[in-house]
Length: 340
Ligand SMILES: [Zn+2]
Image 1: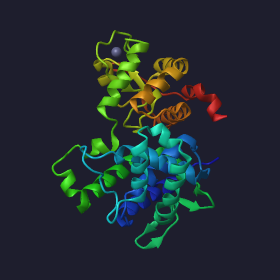
Image 2: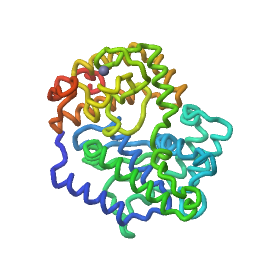
Image 3: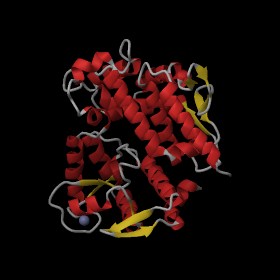
Image 4: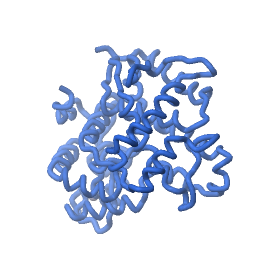
């Protein structure tokens, strides 16, 4: 199947800019919707013009994932307001659930909560997302019964421009919360807002590090003994900013710094795939205890996407300090079953 033309891709980026400039954002829902469909495109889309049908409930689940961390009290105080009027319904529904159950995995398997959140998502952002300057322009998706369908070429663009879409959405989301008068007193001079909204708490990362050390005390990349609990995102966080339990490996500071935002080379990739397969259940347990999302299948789709994107962009993969190799098409053979 063909891929979108350069003109189409440019037009997509232009429309995206217009969406942020001209869209009506009384609540933070539209940022969440954009991040959600971008994430689903990474997991289930293809690098061609194929349209992608997404059922409403899977978007509802993404909303729970995204808002979960944000519905904890800010600075142990009260909830940040995510709407210019009364509190956003999604936030209230999730905050309510949290009072009786503190685990995100319970929230993501609660049919009642998913139904409640999904109904708001359908009535609000899905309906109004594509209003630009007061006119509806269906440039991302068509609405259907129980689902939306990303138009031909959109899943491709969301996959290709994933870091950009994520960054833009997050930046505007943060600005929205900062600009909401109801939050001014609560936020004050605090500059940890971004961390609170989007980053995995340090405590969770430490728990992951401690868990990984029970499997091995060696740096995943160079094999030297690691004294600390430093963890590295195997698929770099800058490429894919959603934390999944199976994406963490133990790494010494030197390898961690040197690898930085690059993908790992073939030899590491091969070992990593073996590592997560062999320790699948163990890593799931470590993740669940640390409050990190556990989704082994998604992890594989995300890794495949990461290397596909690197291949398309002609990226280099990290072997060791100052040593790289070009990403090759044969890397993708590791996921032959996912591509069938
Ligand atoms: Zn190392």
